[in-house]
Amino acid sequence: MFDPELYKRFDQTVARENTECEKWDDRASFGSACALPMWVADMDFETVPEVIAALRERVQHGVFGYSMPTGRDKDALINWLKRRHAADVCAEDVLFSPGVVDSIYHALVALFAPGSKIVVQPPVYGPFFSMPKKAGMQLIENPLIDTDGVWRMDLNGLEDIFKSGADGLVLCSPHNPVGRIWTREELRELGSLCKKYGVTIVSDEIHSDFELDGQKHTCILSVPGCEGAVQLVSATKTFNLAALRHSSIVCRDADKRQKIASQLERAMADVNLFGRLATRIAYESGESWLDTLLVYLRENRDLMYEAQKATGKLRPVSMEGTYLMWVDCRALGMKNEALMDFFVQKAGIIPSGGTFFGSQGDGFVRLNLATQRARVAEAADKIFKALKTL
Ligand SMILES: Cc1ncc(COP(=O)(O)O)c(C=O)c1O
Image (tube, rainbow, N blue to C red; front, side):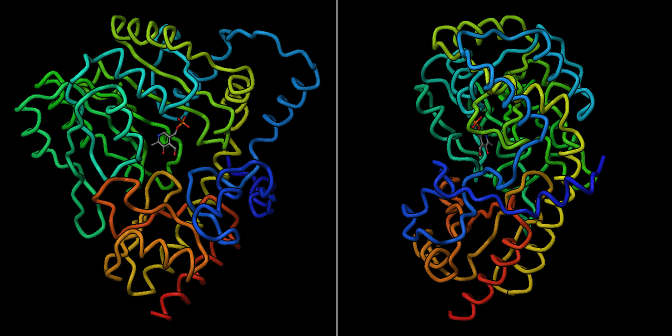
């Protein structure tokens, strides 16, 4: 439920400089220590007040020996998935892992032999390329199709790839960076292809709670043909807890789940007390906070979308899920390096460079809009003025 008091808090600036914060304290590596950082995907907002209180209380205890998950941790996740996504998950289907990228790697190692063929759909979050390679597997790219700024999966291309042999597919759902929430119908078609050709889906759903408009996210395990998929979720994006390192793996297939559990044990991939506690309290108490955040992010999105369109030179995607805006800058005729230089040095903004998401991202940038409204307005203005100098 929307809470006007929480809404006001999102407008309050929280100084993040000199807090060992990657987004703000690593700006010099982009060539400007004072540009506005709109790159790495975390938010400039304080997390849920109840989470801060619970962590404070736990720190106050002062003893940080070994801890153990309790049934309440899984219940909090299961209830969250039921309330927010109408998903039916049993406690035995759930494993914990320190992060979603870790989980992609561990799921691949657990489920596929070295040399297996793993499909990804670029432009896509950088570790989708590096994790299969790290796991000693072959990467196969099935690029998304951009039709006038609406990005879709190339299901014909996918079937051709599957025909010549593929083992796994790492799905980004919702998709970072193009901001799509895949429809149930799109996922159903994907599911039937995967079933037909025996391809296992590892579905990264870290952005699934960012349903900015009416459209609902579909959990992969509810899609026909995808019953054997592995679903990766986390509270860390939703509630801005990334540094606390905690995530969950949902897998209904007992054999696959056992393999992943063994791999997590081999890798000693334990979760930590603070990540687990923060996640649990966020899932139990953070619903109004999230509902309010979604209103705020939607307004940020609309502001930046209109401003970009008004430039007549940039083509933004009006993202459905995520707080990350994918902007087509190809009309400027600049390659990634020149484009980044333009944004950082001329506009005074640090976006994520498009090629982090694969070669298909050349000529694009991704803007992180999870910041105070005044900063989003300032960024829009800076871009507008910088474009005038060209
Ligand atoms: C699609 C996607 N997956 C995973 C991550 C990172 O997850 P974690 O910090 O849990 O490894 C991100 C962060 O931006 C992301 O966008």
